[in-house]
Image (tube, rainbow, N blue to C red; front, top):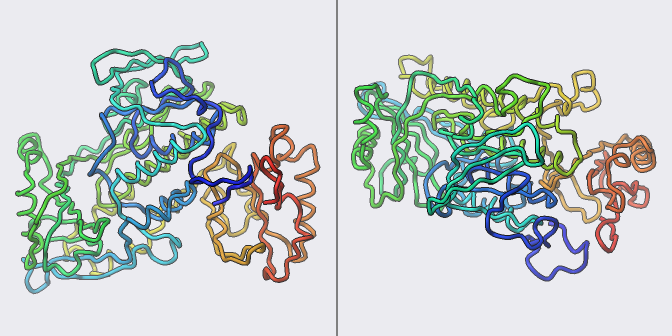
Length: 564
């Protein structure tokens, strides 16, 4: 962390001074606001955590629950989510309480005794080429807690307003706050509020989505799962290793070791619901799910000492065909006012563990764009890129989940060898890891003609980190870990051998009227307030002369204008 640049800080540096709308902020939901976030799940709360960095933007977030989520829901966090936590400065804290994955084991029927399961293969989880970050498991409620703390401690001091049910909305053609929203509070009182933008993060049965007439394509086949968090004793040897367990006739289990060292989650497959059997299947009890799990685990067994959370859910592969009100109208001449994110956009099976991860990226992608537009840094047309970028990701998620689910459900007779599923798992690991996303050329992403300027960094994809030595203090740091979700753009300059070209670049960025630094940095603000510039030299840190490093990369910042 970096602090003290505005003077000595003797308190917790994560609690920052209020600014803009965070000064004298009232707890009650007001009648007007710039952004109204409907739903405080992963896709909604990450927006609040990002928009707190834009304190001049008046952001409010509502949640229909009466208080914080306590247990249940999603649990798997892949490396891209861990990178995101790093950017929001709580990765180390959440990693301490999480369970860390290293391998995944695959179990299936014994060839000589198909009524019993045996381990068929293991695979690194994730493979080493994917990321320096691990796969974690931790309760979704804790993920929300960390983002909520970041939102509340940031300059805008954003807190969740609980107990508000979203009813409907109307987008008007004019007015400073053109989106009229009808709500009902926990006491049954109706409220009308007005916003410049509304984001619907209200789940698979999204009312916000219904209000903007978004088409949803749904796979007619459904899957039903019992999800059960347990404290148990067992002789199953991989009880603390992520495992896929496929039985001969009784279905499958996805076993997820949970945080704390004792808790384990079972996703137990049930029958595929039909109109005739749906009510019976959805009425499955925890005891029945445990009994089924024991049949799948034969010859092993699990003695459940306590069930901490249990739910039955029915899921179809669904994907929204548009993620905002303008895309739903297919009218590129307008700019959107209402957006959807997370489960409101895509639902799928639990087997790939992608729900919370992709939802976080939806919300983050949208939030910084809202902040840029509302603070006047970017044109409103920037908001169109949210639908263009994230709808394609959602469709690829559904395609991947279908393929992975089919692979997990195959019997041994349908596979060429036990290694087939391991090869698929390893070869496709970049997608669930969160690193296969590639945005197409747009007003944000350059075309292939510029690719030679960024060799090794495919345009439209995430910035891949690598370790480097920090010259000032000689510590080894990951270049990408310096990125912070603070609303600034990043400039990474990879220096030429003798440093003359990068010095010329820095001089142009600092002095030219045409440079983005001078065009977009507001007057009377720090030189790095919009563009945070870093330089990576080819030489050893012993051979870099700090006196010759351009000032752009060592800016003077803060109230005291001290060198960074």
